[in-house]
Structures are given as C-alpha cells and as structure tokens.
Length: 255
Image 1: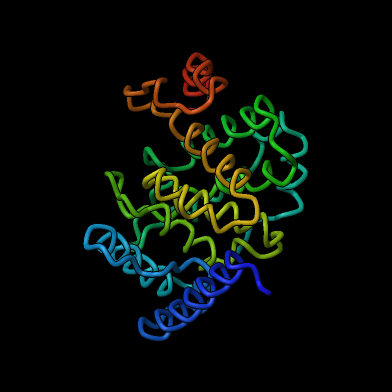
Image 2: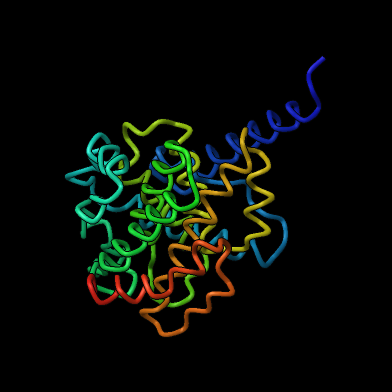
C-alpha cells in the first residue's frame, strides 16, 4: 500500500505540474519556466504577490535569448576552492530589468551579489555544509537578486529571480537536486520564513533544504551594512552573528 505521505506529495506535484502548464499556456510564457511556477495561493494577500510574480515571468519570457550561461564546471571548481570564490564572474547582463535598465551597479547589483557569495561560502565552511549544499548555496547567492524590478521591498523578487534563472537558461548542466534546492532558497529568501518551512516539507531532505535557505538569508542579511541597518539579532546562526566586522571589511574591500 502506498504511504499516505508519498501519495499526498505525488498528488501535489501532479497538481502543480498541471497548474504550471496551464499558466505557461495562458500567459504565453517560455515553457522552461514551468518548474518554478507554484500552485496559486487561495488567500488574497499571497495571491497578490503571486500575480505580481507572474507579471515578472511574462517580462522574462519577452526578453531575447541570452548569449551566455554560467560555466557550471568552473563554478564547481570555485566552490571546492573556497578561498578563491572572490574570482567568480558575476555577469552584469543578468541584472538588466524588464524595462531595459541596467541594474548591475545598484544596491542589489554585482557588488552586493559578490559580497553575499563570499559571506555564503565562508559561512558554509564555518557551519559545515555538505558539498551539495555548498553548490546549491553558491548558485543561490549569485542568482538571488537578478529578477528584481526595483530596489524597494519588491516582496516577490525571489520568485522572479528563480524564474529568470530558468528563463535565461542559467540552470543548464546543474544537478537537478542541487538546482531545486538553489531555486527554493532564491524563491523564498525574500518572503516569509514560515512559508519556506512549509514548502520545504515536500523535499526529500527538508533540513538540508532549509539549511541552504537560512545561510543564504544570513549572507544576504550581513550585507545590510551597506544600508546602515544591520541588526545581528535577526541572523539565524551564531557564526553569522559573529561576522559583523567581516561584513564591514568586505564592504570596504568590494564596494
């Protein structure tokens, strides 16, 4: 007899896949965006964010095909090297917004992304993440803000960033489990942690998935020194809370 939990997961995945196909067909989206389209929430508040996210995916689908993608093998070598991660190239063209504006030099652009990546990998070492978690975290760090359409709250920018990863083809060659974890962290880093915890329950290893998500949140949070409003008590790991001086150091080194 099939385990009820597995049956429920299979049903949910089937519903999500059917919903994603319907959304892609109705809005004329790039079919490659199907994996990042969640089930539509029923409550009005989350539904509004969901609808704005779909608007972002429409914009992504209207963008021309990219001329380059991430070199996954090079990224893996960087992740293994650890200390050499500051040499990882972050493509400024990822940050072009739907209105055509180049946002690579904004407060959520290349500089911010590079600092978040360094924080993420150094935290991965300090906390003891596995190789797969490190790879997912590195990808999440370099892609987490590329879908922003403004530099304000932009609550749903995590989902838009995950959609843009797929829309631009940056995911090609990534191990499916690593990709799923990275896209989950990206999608949820800008939203409710409680919602992320519920979403992770569908993964084979929820704790591993949430660990990557939480390290990304802390790495992103540490760079709030650039805004002058970092509160270390909001950081999730003691290893993160002890990095305030390092955050200021990175901001001076990589403005």
